Length: 449
Image 1 (cartoon, rainbow, N blue to C red):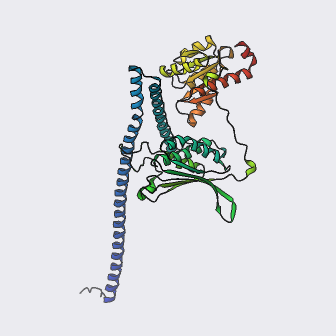
Image 2 (image 1 turned 90 degrees about the vertical axis):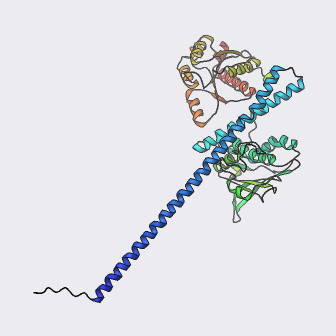
């Protein structure tokens, strides 16, 4: 018997071929998509490597500039100190040396403050002390701060400020923003140039006059900004010229800090420039306060009298706790020059021993002490009975008053703090305030002292 194979029709073959062709087409499409995805991944990887390389290069350049900028002020400081020690100068030359030392020391302080601000920005820890502020007064103070630099370069500053403009903000940080913009304008404007400043109120929407903004313009006739660099003007660690030999000094962090501060205030900062040698215009917009009825009268700060004219801390006993001998000697000299009696301690143990025996009226304490820091020392002091000095008013000396530092200082029991470096008058004024407050709170304690 012969087995017969089933008949395969031409129609069945055609159908199977069509199905196979369709499946093959789908596979080819899937392969093409996979190849496209692989290509995109390779491209993204290449771009990431390029960006990482650019970022690393920018940071390397910034670190080189940072090293240069931090060292630069030290050269005249150390140089003049060596000359003052080795030679006898007349009064005019001595004053010139002291001015140079002070100017460069302040420059280094500013560099360090900028670095600390950027560090807080990157960590999201920069906060504002919000109050109702007259922006007109802030701008006038910033203009006054750059006036001397402008005069030295014969730069004319034309300001249109007008009447009071009230915003909600941090007065010190707002002045920092405006000072950065004005000092940059003066810095990058050649001698004999011009800087224009204007403060105005604008409406964000014509149909809603209640929604108004304050806008500050700072326009200079300086070197201008190349178009390709405009998008990066406010980026951290970016400069149009980051080489050490560039014409203008500085870390290039001021605009980064200014942008972040403006944004924290709910505002916008921007820049325009037509290019090289065409000048530049920076602008800032900030939301105005909604109701003038909520605006308080401007705060007037009483000037701090010079050290020589203060008599309120005469014979006041101050226990000064600081491990840095140079800083300790300087602070002791300032206090003694104002008439205070000063007892020195270089450690927590030494401070505790002298506290109960000498009974100071004020404790001035650095936080960086060997073995036990200043906050821990004060917690130990606060655990003592009043007769042993447990309620002694205390002033903390801090290198950087961050928000966490301030909380730790307050929790430890300090009544006040000062950031280093500080003006001598600030130390005298704060000690005086602590003494007067303590005497007002405890009249019997004042009689005993």
